[in-house]
Length: 255
Image (cartoon, rainbow, N blue to C red; front, side):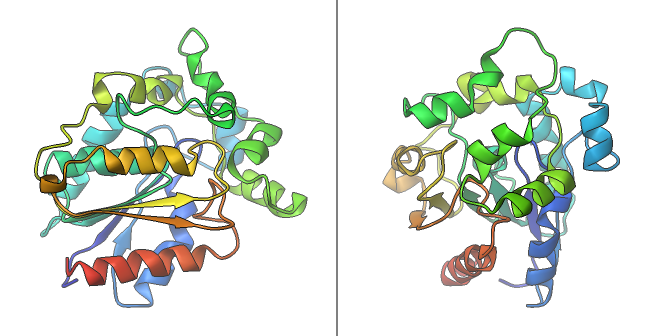
């Protein structure tokens, strides 16, 4: 893996601080990593829930992608990209722009044209379709049901209190339009999709369909589904297994 840094990209309703255990885990193995925030995450999660950042009203998916492309291209070597949920889609879009050495997409949101009609997916994502641009303010009940329905109540509450923030409704609509368009035949670096068997927001079948859209000659496209994992596979107990799978794959692909 050389001296490339890892660039972690969080998803909707979270912050770069949600990656802190991953940054420490990889650092202990000699791999430097960074986990910047999307816009609108200044202060604590509690502060943001009490007062959603005004910029969330205008924030779009392309703004997030542009921000992380600038970060990636500022590195001495293109970084290894790891993204969760909407961050997984950002990884796909950055690889399409040639802004990463390899990518791992954990429970990735889908690009334009890749759809699921699973009931849990539709219900979990319904808020992005409401009219207007007011930020989505997630309740703990919604977050538990959508992200971590298998978690113990105290653990779910602690994670919510520490990490969960309001989110841009416009970013959530990004996968429905050209901001999320990908040329599935265009050559790009290796890409691993990791699906969570108990994911309600991004069902495993949607991850599989996402991976299957890439043409064989576009580059290495690998897929793995992990049992007993929810959409919060980056934070629920046992996340170290997901990190280990990520590291093993990167070493296997010699990036």
